[in-house]
Each structure stands twice: as C-alpha cells, then as structure tokens.
Amino acid sequence: MLFGKLTFETVLQVDDKTRLDASLSFANDSENITDVLIEPASGEGFVSVYNGGDSSRWYLDWAYETGGFVDVSVRIIADSGSKTKTYVAGINVLTEDEDALISNDNDLWPYEPDLKNYIPSGKNSFIYAHRKAQERILAFLDEQRIWREDGTRYTKQDLVNLPSEFKEQFNQWSTFQTLLIIFESIQVSSGDIFQEKKLEYENLMRQARNRSSLKLDQDGDGELEDIAYNIRSTRLVRR
Image (tube, rainbow, N blue to C red; front, side):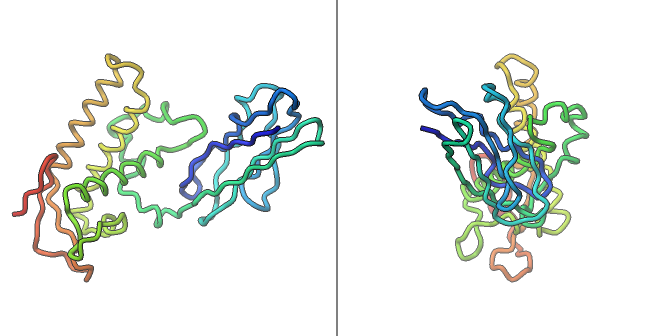
C-alpha cells in the first residue's frame, strides 16, 4: 500500500515562500516507490520531487501570487506507474490586508541584524512568527477580559485599525513577542546564547505589554471610547 503525507502551513500570506514537504510519505515493503509528485494548486500541474530513496528531498518550495483557498496535492507512484496514491489538502492564502499582522520583519532587524541567518529552511521571512504573535496578543486580551461592549473578542482587524499612537504600542508588543517566539524555536539548550536572548525578549515583551495603555472601540461605532486599560501580566486595572 502507498501512504501519501504532506507537511505544509495551513495559513500563508501572498508571496511568502513555503515548503510543501512529502518526505513523510511511504510505502509498505511490498511496494517500490518510483516517483513522488507535488501539485502546489489545482491546475498548476504536478512537479516531480523524487530523489531516489532519499525521502528528505521530497519537497517543493513555492509561493502563491494571489489570495484564496488552494488545494495542494502529493501523488505517490509505485512500480513505474502501475500503482498511485494521491493526497489532497487545503491552504488558506491571505493577502497582507487580510493577514493584518501588527509587526513585520523590518521591525526585527534593528534588534537582531543577523536574524536573517535563522530563517527556517523553506522560508524567506518570519511572517509565520508575526502571525503567532498576533494570536498570542489576541488570546491575552481575551484572557484579561478586555472585550467589546457586547462581550465579543477583539479581532486582528481591530488592532491594525487603531490610531497611530496606540498602534505603535501594539507594534512594540508584537515585535518583542515575535522575537521571543523565534528564539524559543531556535534555542538549543538552557544555557546557550539563545536562552539568554529568549529571556531578554520575554522581559521586553512583558514590559511592552505592561506599558500598553489601550483605548479600544467597545461598541463598534468606529470611535474610541474614554475607557483606558492598563495591561498587566496577572490582572486588569481600569482607570
């Protein structure tokens, strides 16, 4: 039997490089894989990524030029075409406006000029880490019960639409949160330089978060309310 498996990012931004990885695909002992092909989107056509028995090379690097949902497929061929297995999955490709990230890579370089050396294989940016930072910020606001007037959670669009003085505060929070995520992922051991940087950016992130005095549109009328919040790591203080 043939077993197609594709490792991929389920959410991407337009023009952001990604790796479609079929290296976890396999066949049982009775089958002899003779080709592995990946189609990055319906109608693009299948591209052979087969490299003999070296499954670590069974991948295709790609970038999507337009937003929308796309179907990506991996096809495993055995015995020179007599047997095939195709696995199909979906990717949500967002435009920059739809992604609504609070920070970007240009915010990182002043703190870590050599950070480009640590961009993961198959990527050309840290957009994925900025998106994870966005998720953590929204989750924190929810945990602290900073909600709209109707009790619903704030969304990423609410944060990017803040006035410049408040948007700048969120940008700092997101920048340090992103750096923390990056150094969490590349830390090798608890005593190495990456551990020191992780602790440094965790401290800076908490300071940026604690400094944030927020005015958020509670009733959705497009006007900022007169309620100011002071974000703390353990409690919410209303002034």
